Image (tube, rainbow, N blue to C red; front, side, top):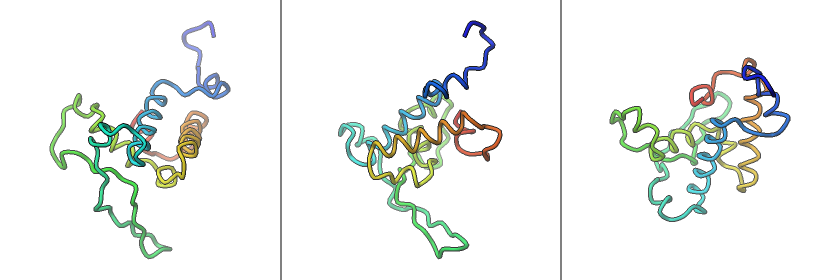
Length: 139
């Protein structure tokens, strides 16, 4: 790549490299996985709490389904400054809770990483074809 205006997304995709913003997102999600499943250091696990009062989602074909894989959001309804939203204690629960449940309930760390990277690389491949999601908001 010699010109600055060259679109690098095809290069990233071919090289299996995540863009910087998506790499940070990936690392935050991976840290969330380790905290949620107890493989992160204790001092990090102490910063976050699992949400015991999960919402019941109503679906048309199923009676109801409980999402057991969420963190409590800190400070409830308290307004947080723009800088405060960047704190890991604020950002990680939002990012983790926004992931699809099929990713959060992965049986192993390797499976979690594979599922998450698949979604992140799909976002690189066809951003115009996919519906609005948390990835559009985060990036």
